[in-house]
Length: 256
Ligand SMILES: [Mg+2]
Image (cartoon, rainbow, N blue to C red; front, side):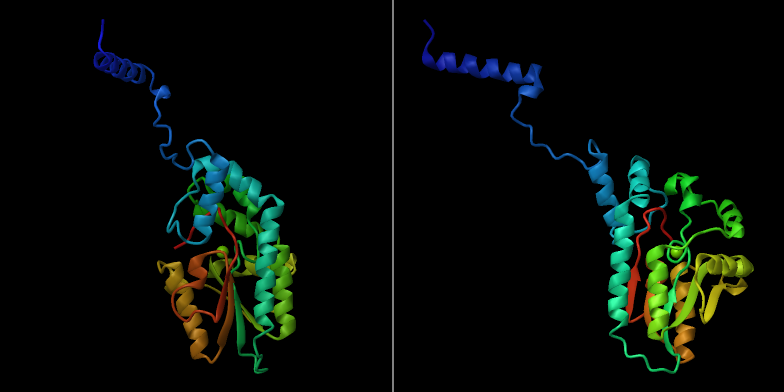
């Protein structure tokens, strides 16, 4: 007859072989699940937050697993709500600014994905999951059919009413001035003081440096850059930054 000790040893080996044959019986079920592995929607919401807050840093295209999620967001109510909340905060700040009345209190706006939406272009290019094609985008710009974001138009008009001088600062090229102006007017914008576009000397400069240089020139002219609204961190960061900057959402592309 087997002793209790030898029975225990046999039982131990029995369990060992059972776990070896079928690991699913193993008690080691608490391994860390990598985001995105089996919950695309949750991962894509997290990715979008990381992209908006600049925690994701520089990125080229949106993760392919997130195309549907980004499309749903951009075409849904959440995007409109996000834009409206930002516009409300910007207007609330603007009302606290003491306007000097000399025309020097400036609010800067970026254009693409800030005043005008190119969603129809990006819809045809998988919402930013394809690498950016400058030639194809320029063909779209020439058409001049990009509509306004309702929330941006509301913010823009509120700022004008409060007495801010509006300056438009875009990465578009100088030779796109006439298409850009007519597109802006058709979309409902009017009364800007200046439209600053990239000239020949600005080519090859990073967006952050180009826009900082332009703001710096305004400061040298005596303008006070009170507010700035853009969809890219490169619209807002660098030097000669505004008193307050407002980042509007854009989960489709990143410009450094
Ligand atoms: Mg933009």
